Length: 213
Length: 214
Image (cartoon, rainbow over all chains, first blue to last red; front, side, top):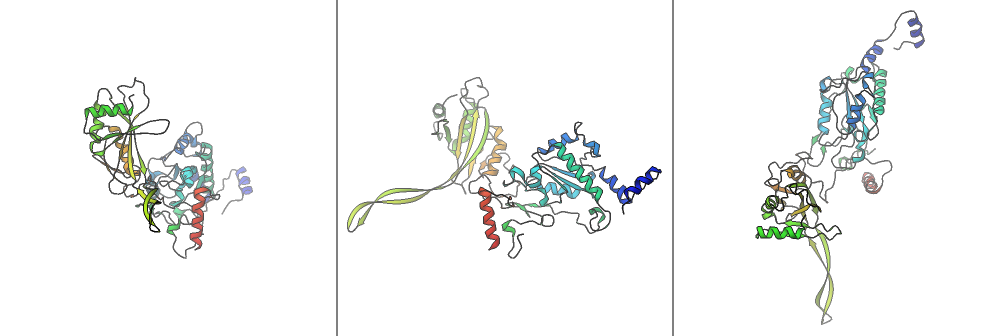
């Protein structure tokens, strides 16, 4: 239950600070999002620039890039995901503790980008893991990454702690482990995780009678 | 830099038994190459590296080429009985020229780098066919620099290099079975189509649409 803004201001004038559990909980969460320190391709250079003095991601409480997925809250998919790398990316995501978030940075990470029609490139990481914010661009400028980060903060801030929309770590039923694709004889198996990517399947994977969307 | 013919003559004087010929390049660049027979390739390569005059001690690049088999239609005059009279009749005869895989190496000399350089010395080796006779001798023992590049050729073209110290796939994963740079490779149909498809993508998108409606 939210506090009425007018009442909050009025009480604030009297020296009384009023808040709700979810508000202060989310305020804490959104201002200490620690990204995982890993880069995949050229977007990683922009990500590094974002953390440096000129763009200074530290202003948003996210300067602590953790070298271990166990200590990270945010995965920035910065670059092309090759099919050889994709299982490792999903495995790293599985190793992160909840609550965890994903920013897909750049054209490659969201769709395969300029390499979309290549045989060796995954056509977007959201085929295997849920993505919170997509940033287009090739590569996106550091401002775009900061904007994505602020979008993520707004998303965290707006999350209710109870009900159907509550974050995954507060939902005992929520799926925490995402299947790691196998590297098969011709392609990744399966080519897509249907639970997170319910869009049209490749023609070969369609079963008769199944809706193509 | 010497021409391919001059180098060939030098090889022939030193190694008279070696199977080497000039593979001409008819384009204006006229960058002719040396076609080595796989049996004597390592001996010839070692000679090119160690010969004091040539000293081709640096292999800058190794790559593969896929030459698929092609069907050739030829007109042949055949003697035939036409209404009891033997006459020459032109007949179209089709024959299939078998394809092969080719490994190409570009050599330079660091020792003679101050000499006028007209371009690399190009070596070629050809496999017997594209299916079961795909073994070529590795030149990694001669030029260490081609170790990864021969692995890449093995990965993407499927040429097996005998004598390579560590022949594994380098770009694709170990379980992978295809050779993506071959002309007859069919890539997995794993992309959904753009809102405004065109060319090859449009063709595949339409194919998908008909498949889905059937």
